[in-house]
Image (tube, rainbow, N blue to C red):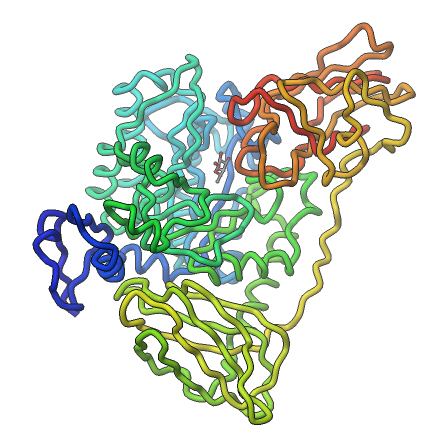
Length: 619
Ligand code: FUL
C-alpha cells in the first residue's frame, strides 16, 4: 500500500481526499476542522514501521541490574563505591536463555539507573564497571548481554536514566546534555543494533541540588541518526508509558492519542489545556479528539516488575508474582492494545533467580497452550466492517470457550470504538462479551460456554474497521496462590498512637488508612521494649495517593522522651510510581519501646500524610 505522509500544512488542504491516505505517527488538525473531519483524520493516523514492529513483539523484558542490586536499594544516591558492584557468577547467556524460552522478543538493560553507575566502561565518567574490581575493571555487562542476545536471537534495548545523581555536571544545562548525548552515542555505536531506547520520566535533583533541563531535540536526533530502527520510549515519542507500574492497562486504549509526548516543548501547555497526563483514563475519546489540535500515534507500554521492587532483593524471593497474577497482567497489557515490558531483575550472583525462571516458564506455557488452539473453524480471513455490520464464525464441535480475541490491522489505523460478541446455542443468540477499543489486540474473558456459532458486531467505529484476527479459546482457570506479605514481625496488639488518632496506621490492615493534614509524625508506644531491626511502611491502597511519604526520618526511644535517629536511607524511592509496602532494615538493632515515623516530604510536595500501615521488623 502506498503511504502518503502529509505535513501539517498539507493536511489543511487535503480534506476530501480518499481513504487510502494516511498520516504516519502524527497529524495536525487544520484550524476550524469539524469533529467529523478530525475523527476521519484520526482514523488514518498510523504507526511508523518501527512502531508497528515493536507492537508485534507483544512480550518484552526489562532487566534492572546495577549498584542497587548490591545495596538493596531501589534508587541509589550516586555516592556508592563502584566496588560494590561485584556479581560472582554473571552469565548473560543464562538470562537470555530464560527469556528466550519465556517467549520474550527483546531485552532492555538498565545501562545506567538514577545512581549514575554505568554497566559499560564509558569514557564519560569513572562511575562505572571499569572502576569496580569485577573482572579487574575489564568487564562490560552491556557487551555480554548484547552477545548473548545475538547468540539466541533476541532484540536488544537500553535504558539510560536521564536523571543522574552522580554526575557533577547534572543540573548545569548544556554540560550535562553533552555528557548524556556522549553516553548515548557510546551505547548506540558500540553495541550493534538497538531496538528500543528507554528514558525514564523521573527527574529529581543531582548532587549539586539542581534539576536538569534536558535537550530532547539533541537526544532524540542522536538516536534517529545512530539507530534509525529504534523506538524511543516514555520520554521518547514512539512509545508511551501506560501510566502505572502495576501492570494495569486500560480497557479503552487508544494508540492514536491526544497526549503530547514529554520530549516536546509544547507538552505542558497542550496537555494542561486538555486536562490530560500519562495517567489519565481517557487519552483518545471522540470528546478529547474534538478538543485537540493534533494527535500522535503513541502506543502504550505496560512496564511492571515480576517482584515488588525493580531491582533484585533477596528478601523478595518469595514474592515473585504468581502465575495467576502474571496471566492477569498479560490480559491487561497484551490483551489491552499494549506491549508488556516485564521486569526480571538479575540477582547478586548475576543470574536470574530460579524462582523467576520457573515463573516465566509457567507463564509462556500457559499463554502458548491457551492460544495454540483456536476453537473457530476458518478464522484466518481478514474482513472490513461498517458500523452495525457483523460477522459470524462456526465454532468447532463441543469446544468449551471462555476467551475472545480480536485484532485490528493497525497499519490502516485504529478505528474500532465498540464491539459485541454473541454466542449461538440452542437456537438462540445471547451476549457473551463486549468491548470498546481494539487496536493491535484485545482479549476478553467470559464464563465457560459452548456454542455452535459466534457473531461479532462492530457497534461503533471511526470509518471502516479493518479486522485482522478473531479467535475463541479455552483458557484454563487459575487460582491465585499469592501469599499476603507480613508487614510486621511484632503483633500490633496493645500498640497505642500518641498525640494523634492514628489507629488506622497500626491496626494490622493496609486497607484502613490514617490521613492527616500537614506532614504529621506517627508516634507509637508498643507497650514493651524490643530490639528493632527495621520497619515497614505501606502507603494507602486507595487510588488517591495524596499524603504518601517520599522522604522520612525514623526514630526510636525507650522512654518516649529521648529519641535516637535510626540509620536508614530516608527515602521510599519510586513509591510515587510503585506504591507497594516498603521494608527498611537498619543493618543493626536498636532498643525501642516507642517509634516515630516522621514524614519529611510527600510524593508531590504536598502538606499531607497518609499511612496504610506501619510494621516493626525484628530481623
Ligand atoms: C521508574 C524508576 O524510577 C524505577 O526505578 C524504574 O526504573 C522504573 C522502570 O521507572 O520510574
